[in-house]
Length: 220
Image 1 (tube, helix red, strand yellow):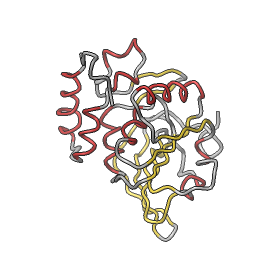
Image 2 (cartoon, one colour; image 1 turned 135 degrees about the vertical axis):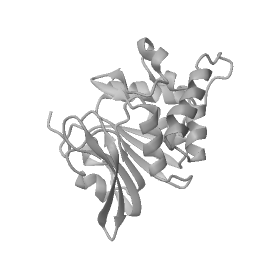
Image 3 (tube, helix red, strand yellow; image 1 turned 90 degrees about the vertical axis):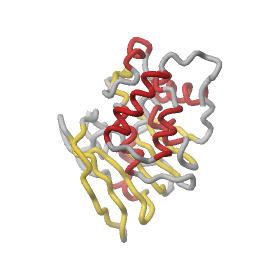
């Protein structure tokens, strides 16, 4: 997953992140912990912010977008209860860090990014790290995957005013979807299971995400 020939100057802070910010805050899934200990988060952070790559907070990545704090990445991943048979839709590729985490835990990731510059940057980093099970699309993520397809799990990594109906329709029966729902400021992180075609929701915690712009998201 990374170049072992390159000196790992972030090994200490990555271990600290794992113990304090993840295990210390209730992340228990051994696969999530393993993957987040292996993936070099600094690869996904612009150079001016790399010294803070493992701080437990969001960082800017350009286009008024951010890379989520490690704890939230781990929490959202853990809540989806992933396995190697899952096909996952991720809405909001961003830096590609969350994409990389998902890619190590599932069969395939389909990821949508509104900004082509971010999508290209994320794709370049993932290719550099040898990730091969990710399919990219640039477009309006609030409309779901552009082709007729159903997903075992769906993750939206930007705030929406309400659950986007076209996205929910692409979730398989008994599938899980995680999404930050709300308006300016604080949103609620919601995990949703599809039962008999209807959403069964549970609120996990309050979060702060940038807004998902689009037809079924926020207006520009």
